[in-house]
Length: 125
Image 1: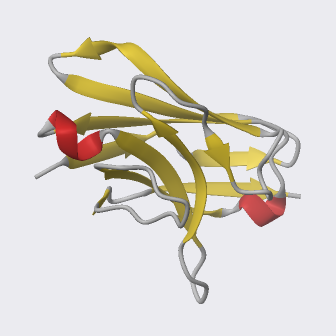
Image 2: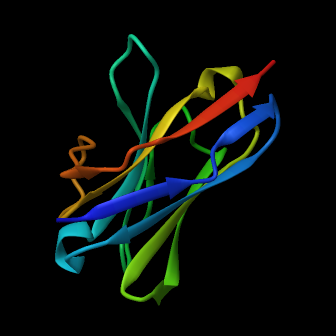
């Protein structure tokens, strides 16, 4: 089983920046693809960004392209993989619960096997 622990959420004004972190542990082969999704109450969860651990180009939803960057920390800590979501030029529409996610393979439909508990991001205008 893969465990995902997010941190770094908070409140920021529009135009500001935040960096989310995700520490992933468990069988490495089951978390070769990692990403972030977000959810607003009343709306479904949507994918934001994903990256194939160890290589491959990151992929972003159109709503965050040019503003969000997903990064892998190559210095594994005790077998954990750390993935960041650097968010800049934040907008009120980015307000959501953000979840770290993992899967064995990266697919084109944001299909992940494991999800973290989430961290809240609130952007005020």
